[in-house]
Image (cartoon, rainbow, N blue to C red; front, side, top):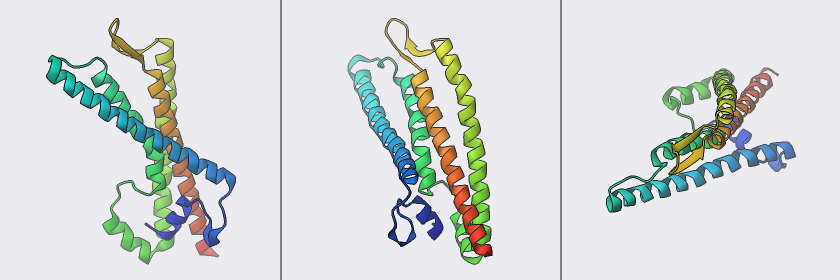
Length: 188
């Protein structure tokens, strides 16, 4: 991980000065979403274990487990994505990027900035398209499960997915701006 990326993820600025309140608030939001995703991992583990016990004890699965588990999985990934981006933990070819960064720091910042802009566009597009899905779910009273046994509305999951992807898209924009600052500072 490059030094500039570490500074962008830190709540403190170079020299030990405290970060701007807006930046601290943004970091808090990203970490809060990641924490919510971690709670969902725990919930998913509990319902999977409960389903295993039910299958062994009663010979049948609990209602909502497969549909709820699938929605929970996508939701927790979306909620933790911005923190993953912020921590520079997305899969990349470090065997190529690390030497390239050492040899050409400004060009590497440009390449990373381009990657971040593409990430922002892709995740922003997913978030934008999620709006129509949420509208449809609310209008049609979409739910998962079996009527009369157990049902859950899908829109709360979709709203969390939208929030996760939107925040991750903005985090990509923040990283692209950091890369641009590195490129500009290198020209002076």
